[in-house]
Length: 123
Image (cartoon, rainbow, N blue to C red; front, side, top):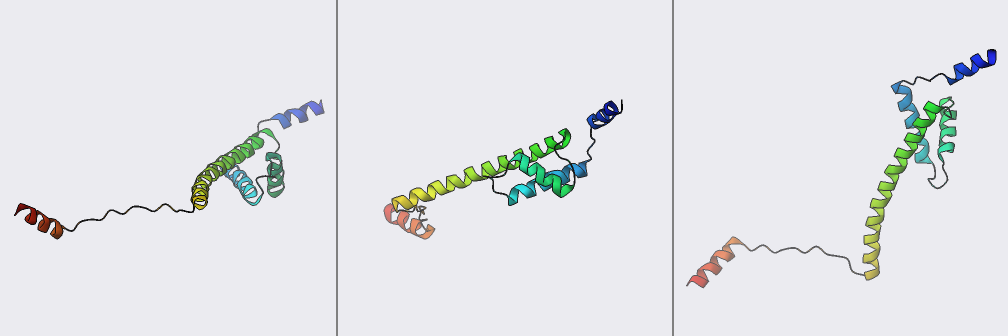
């Protein structure tokens, strides 16, 4: 009977306030920023955040928050990488061609030249 009561208490829904949720997400982002994106996993990030915060983040409501923080970070990182790759592609093409694209500047005619020109053609 005691086991059933303990299990029921463990399965109770955990209520998380906004401050704790924010702290968990910030901690996960901080861990991701200092980690190699080639080596870090959601599980590793969750374990590190658990140790830093002194919470068991492997439980369901916490686990979901960690996943959301990881997914958000990865989406932003991918967007940034795609942007930078586009810039690098342009630079590489320019380097290979040995020519840098120059912006064409249009020369503006001075109004006095236009007036002189109009007077000359009219006469």
